[in-house]
View 1 (tube, one colour):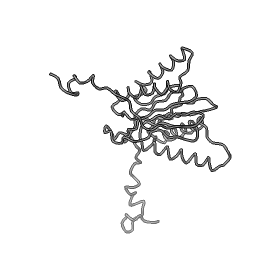
View 2 (cartoon, helix red, strand yellow):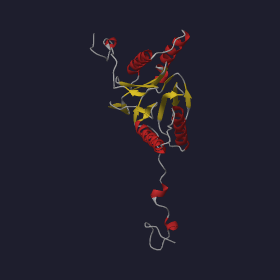
View 3 (cartoon, helix red, strand yellow):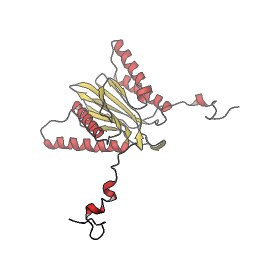
View 4 (cartoon, one colour):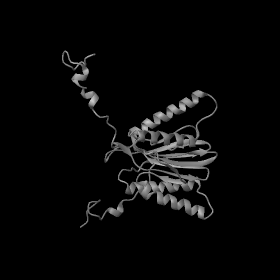
Length: 255
Protein backbone atom coordinates (compact mmCIF):
# COMPACT_ATOMS: atom_id res chain seq x y z
CA UNK A 1 0.00 0.00 0.00
CA UNK A 2 1.08 3.57 -0.66
CA UNK A 3 1.90 5.68 2.37
CA UNK A 4 0.53 9.20 2.66
CA UNK A 5 3.14 12.00 2.55
CA UNK A 6 2.21 12.97 6.12
CA UNK A 7 2.58 9.43 7.52
CA UNK A 8 5.59 8.21 9.45
CA UNK A 9 8.08 5.76 7.90
CA UNK A 10 6.49 2.33 7.76
CA UNK A 11 2.96 3.65 8.27
CA UNK A 12 0.26 3.18 5.68
CA UNK A 13 -2.16 5.98 4.77
CA UNK A 14 -4.98 4.17 6.58
CA UNK A 15 -2.86 3.86 9.73
CA UNK A 16 -1.74 7.49 9.64
CA UNK A 17 -5.35 8.69 9.27
CA UNK A 18 -6.79 11.20 6.83
CA UNK A 19 -5.37 14.71 6.60
CA UNK A 20 -7.27 17.79 7.72
CA UNK A 21 -8.10 18.58 4.09
CA UNK A 22 -10.27 15.45 3.98
CA UNK A 23 -11.95 15.93 7.35
CA UNK A 24 -12.99 19.59 7.02
CA UNK A 25 -16.72 20.00 6.31
CA UNK A 26 -17.80 21.53 3.03
CA UNK A 27 -18.81 25.12 3.66
CA UNK A 28 -21.82 26.82 2.01
CA UNK A 29 -22.84 30.44 1.98
CA UNK A 30 -25.12 30.99 4.96
CA UNK A 31 -25.63 34.72 4.69
CA UNK A 32 -25.34 37.07 1.68
CA UNK A 33 -22.75 39.83 2.07
CA UNK A 34 -23.20 42.37 -0.77
CA UNK A 35 -26.92 42.61 -1.44
CA UNK A 36 -29.52 44.49 -3.43
CA UNK A 37 -32.96 45.25 -2.10
CA UNK A 38 -36.44 45.23 -3.68
CA UNK A 39 -37.25 44.92 -7.38
CA UNK A 40 -40.69 45.76 -8.78
CA UNK A 41 -42.62 44.75 -11.88
CA UNK A 42 -45.99 45.59 -13.42
CA UNK A 43 -47.74 44.67 -16.65
CA UNK A 44 -49.17 47.36 -18.87
CA UNK A 45 -51.08 47.33 -22.14
CA UNK A 46 -48.50 45.89 -24.53
CA UNK A 47 -45.62 45.07 -22.23
CA UNK A 48 -44.00 44.92 -18.80
CA UNK A 49 -41.91 47.37 -16.79
CA UNK A 50 -39.32 46.36 -14.18
CA UNK A 51 -37.73 48.74 -11.70
CA UNK A 52 -34.66 48.34 -9.47
CA UNK A 53 -32.42 50.79 -7.69
CA UNK A 54 -28.67 50.78 -8.29
CA UNK A 55 -27.47 50.18 -4.73
CA UNK A 56 -25.54 47.15 -3.52
CA UNK A 57 -25.12 47.26 0.25
CA UNK A 58 -22.20 45.73 2.16
CA UNK A 59 -24.18 44.71 5.21
CA UNK A 60 -25.70 48.00 6.37
CA UNK A 61 -23.15 50.09 4.48
CA UNK A 62 -24.37 51.65 1.20
CA UNK A 63 -21.19 50.55 -0.55
CA UNK A 64 -21.81 50.41 -4.32
CA UNK A 65 -24.22 52.91 -5.87
CA UNK A 66 -23.91 52.11 -9.59
CA UNK A 67 -24.88 48.43 -9.81
CA UNK A 68 -27.32 47.50 -12.59
CA UNK A 69 -29.69 44.85 -11.28
CA UNK A 70 -31.59 44.53 -14.57
CA UNK A 71 -30.22 42.03 -17.09
CA UNK A 72 -31.59 41.46 -20.62
CA UNK A 73 -31.77 37.84 -21.76
CA UNK A 74 -32.50 37.31 -25.43
CA UNK A 75 -34.58 39.69 -27.55
CA UNK A 76 -37.76 39.88 -25.44
CA UNK A 77 -36.83 38.93 -21.86
CA UNK A 78 -35.33 40.74 -18.89
CA UNK A 79 -34.66 39.66 -15.31
CA UNK A 80 -34.36 41.82 -12.19
CA UNK A 81 -32.64 40.55 -9.06
CA UNK A 82 -32.57 41.26 -5.36
CA UNK A 83 -30.37 39.48 -2.86
CA UNK A 84 -26.71 38.49 -3.16
CA UNK A 85 -24.98 40.31 -6.01
CA UNK A 86 -22.22 37.74 -6.51
CA UNK A 87 -24.88 35.03 -6.95
CA UNK A 88 -26.66 37.31 -9.43
CA UNK A 89 -23.41 37.65 -11.37
CA UNK A 90 -23.17 33.86 -11.44
CA UNK A 91 -26.72 33.65 -12.81
CA UNK A 92 -25.87 36.26 -15.45
CA UNK A 93 -22.86 34.19 -16.51
CA UNK A 94 -24.98 31.02 -16.70
CA UNK A 95 -27.75 32.74 -18.68
CA UNK A 96 -25.30 34.31 -21.12
CA UNK A 97 -23.74 30.88 -21.69
CA UNK A 98 -27.17 29.35 -22.23
CA UNK A 99 -28.12 31.97 -24.81
CA UNK A 100 -24.74 31.59 -26.53
CA UNK A 101 -25.34 27.85 -26.91
CA UNK A 102 -28.76 28.61 -28.41
CA UNK A 103 -27.21 30.97 -30.97
CA UNK A 104 -24.58 28.39 -31.91
CA UNK A 105 -27.35 25.95 -32.83
CA UNK A 106 -28.14 28.34 -35.71
CA UNK A 107 -31.60 26.84 -36.20
CA UNK A 108 -33.50 30.12 -36.19
CA UNK A 109 -35.09 29.56 -32.77
CA UNK A 110 -34.42 31.12 -29.40
CA UNK A 111 -35.59 30.55 -25.86
CA UNK A 112 -38.86 32.24 -24.97
CA UNK A 113 -39.57 34.12 -21.76
CA UNK A 114 -41.55 31.20 -20.32
CA UNK A 115 -38.70 28.78 -21.11
CA UNK A 116 -36.13 31.04 -19.44
CA UNK A 117 -38.48 31.33 -16.44
CA UNK A 118 -38.75 27.54 -16.17
CA UNK A 119 -34.99 27.13 -16.59
CA UNK A 120 -34.35 29.56 -13.74
CA UNK A 121 -36.84 27.75 -11.51
CA UNK A 122 -35.05 24.43 -12.11
CA UNK A 123 -31.62 25.96 -11.46
CA UNK A 124 -32.75 27.62 -8.24
CA UNK A 125 -34.52 24.48 -7.01
CA UNK A 126 -31.54 22.31 -7.95
CA UNK A 127 -29.11 24.49 -6.01
CA UNK A 128 -31.49 24.57 -3.05
CA UNK A 129 -31.66 20.76 -3.11
CA UNK A 130 -27.85 20.63 -2.85
CA UNK A 131 -28.01 22.94 0.21
CA UNK A 132 -26.07 25.51 -1.81
CA UNK A 133 -28.74 28.01 -2.90
CA UNK A 134 -28.28 31.09 -5.02
CA UNK A 135 -29.44 33.80 -2.60
CA UNK A 136 -31.63 35.76 -4.97
CA UNK A 137 -35.23 36.75 -5.57
CA UNK A 138 -35.84 37.22 -9.29
CA UNK A 139 -38.51 38.81 -11.45
CA UNK A 140 -38.68 37.53 -15.03
CA UNK A 141 -40.47 39.75 -17.54
CA UNK A 142 -41.04 39.49 -21.26
CA UNK A 143 -43.41 38.84 -24.11
CA UNK A 144 -44.84 35.33 -24.47
CA UNK A 145 -47.20 34.53 -27.35
CA UNK A 146 -47.60 38.28 -27.96
CA UNK A 147 -48.77 38.77 -24.36
CA UNK A 148 -46.94 40.38 -21.41
CA UNK A 149 -45.40 37.85 -19.00
CA UNK A 150 -44.26 38.52 -15.43
CA UNK A 151 -43.07 35.81 -13.03
CA UNK A 152 -41.25 35.38 -9.72
CA UNK A 153 -38.51 32.88 -8.75
CA UNK A 154 -36.69 32.71 -5.42
CA UNK A 155 -33.82 30.79 -3.84
CA UNK A 156 -36.12 27.88 -2.91
CA UNK A 157 -37.34 27.46 -6.47
CA UNK A 158 -40.75 28.92 -5.58
CA UNK A 159 -42.50 30.29 -8.67
CA UNK A 160 -45.67 32.22 -9.39
CA UNK A 161 -46.86 34.91 -11.76
CA UNK A 162 -49.03 37.97 -11.32
CA UNK A 163 -49.80 41.27 -13.11
CA UNK A 164 -47.87 43.07 -10.34
CA UNK A 165 -44.90 41.71 -8.38
CA UNK A 166 -42.39 42.95 -5.83
CA UNK A 167 -39.57 41.32 -3.88
CA UNK A 168 -37.93 42.06 -0.56
CA UNK A 169 -39.30 44.95 1.49
CA UNK A 170 -41.26 46.04 -1.56
CA UNK A 171 -43.49 42.99 -1.17
CA UNK A 172 -44.84 44.62 2.01
CA UNK A 173 -45.14 48.30 1.13
CA UNK A 174 -44.97 48.59 -2.67
CA UNK A 175 -47.02 45.58 -3.76
CA UNK A 176 -50.25 46.92 -2.18
CA UNK A 177 -49.80 50.18 -4.12
CA UNK A 178 -49.12 48.32 -7.36
CA UNK A 179 -52.04 45.94 -6.88
CA UNK A 180 -54.53 48.69 -6.01
CA UNK A 181 -53.62 50.83 -9.02
CA UNK A 182 -53.81 47.85 -11.36
CA UNK A 183 -57.13 46.59 -10.01
CA UNK A 184 -58.69 50.07 -9.96
CA UNK A 185 -57.89 50.48 -13.65
CA UNK A 186 -59.40 47.12 -14.54
CA UNK A 187 -62.45 47.75 -12.37
CA UNK A 188 -63.04 50.88 -14.47
CA UNK A 189 -62.78 48.81 -17.66
CA UNK A 190 -59.41 50.30 -18.58
CA UNK A 191 -55.83 49.06 -18.85
CA UNK A 192 -52.63 50.50 -17.51
CA UNK A 193 -50.73 52.39 -20.18
CA UNK A 194 -46.96 52.59 -20.32
CA UNK A 195 -47.07 56.13 -18.90
CA UNK A 196 -49.40 55.00 -16.09
CA UNK A 197 -47.05 52.13 -15.21
CA UNK A 198 -43.97 54.35 -15.18
CA UNK A 199 -45.68 56.92 -12.95
CA UNK A 200 -46.82 54.16 -10.60
CA UNK A 201 -43.32 52.68 -10.32
CA UNK A 202 -41.80 56.12 -9.71
CA UNK A 203 -44.21 56.57 -6.82
CA UNK A 204 -43.32 53.15 -5.41
CA UNK A 205 -39.58 53.74 -5.75
CA UNK A 206 -39.96 57.01 -3.83
CA UNK A 207 -41.90 55.25 -1.06
CA UNK A 208 -39.19 52.57 -0.87
CA UNK A 209 -36.48 55.21 -0.64
CA UNK A 210 -38.29 56.80 2.31
CA UNK A 211 -38.99 53.54 4.12
CA UNK A 212 -36.39 50.94 3.12
CA UNK A 213 -33.05 51.54 4.83
CA UNK A 214 -31.25 49.52 2.11
CA UNK A 215 -32.59 51.48 -0.88
CA UNK A 216 -31.22 54.38 -2.89
CA UNK A 217 -32.85 57.32 -4.66
CA UNK A 218 -31.32 56.24 -7.95
CA UNK A 219 -33.02 53.59 -10.04
CA UNK A 220 -33.55 52.18 -13.52
CA UNK A 221 -36.50 50.94 -15.55
CA UNK A 222 -36.54 48.08 -18.02
CA UNK A 223 -39.38 48.31 -20.55
CA UNK A 224 -40.11 45.07 -22.38
CA UNK A 225 -42.40 45.12 -25.43
CA UNK A 226 -42.66 43.33 -28.78
CA UNK A 227 -39.98 45.70 -30.05
CA UNK A 228 -37.46 44.42 -27.50
CA UNK A 229 -35.91 45.35 -24.16
CA UNK A 230 -35.02 48.94 -23.31
CA UNK A 231 -33.15 49.70 -20.08
CA UNK A 232 -33.18 53.34 -19.01
CA UNK A 233 -30.33 55.39 -17.67
CA UNK A 234 -30.34 55.87 -13.88
CA UNK A 235 -32.91 58.42 -12.69
CA UNK A 236 -34.00 59.77 -9.33
CA UNK A 237 -37.13 61.08 -7.62
CA UNK A 238 -37.66 64.49 -6.05
CA UNK A 239 -37.78 63.84 -2.32
CA UNK A 240 -38.80 66.00 0.63
CA UNK A 241 -37.42 65.62 4.15
CA UNK A 242 -38.69 68.89 5.67
CA UNK A 243 -41.28 66.97 7.69
CA UNK A 244 -38.46 65.74 9.94
CA UNK A 245 -36.87 69.11 10.72
CA UNK A 246 -38.60 69.47 14.09
CA UNK A 247 -37.97 65.91 15.17
CA UNK A 248 -35.15 65.43 17.65
CA UNK A 249 -32.22 63.83 15.85
CA UNK A 250 -33.18 65.11 12.37
CA UNK A 251 -32.17 68.35 10.72
CA UNK A 252 -31.83 71.60 12.67
CA UNK A 253 -32.67 71.27 16.34
CA UNK A 254 -35.42 73.61 17.52
CA UNK A 255 -35.95 74.21 21.21
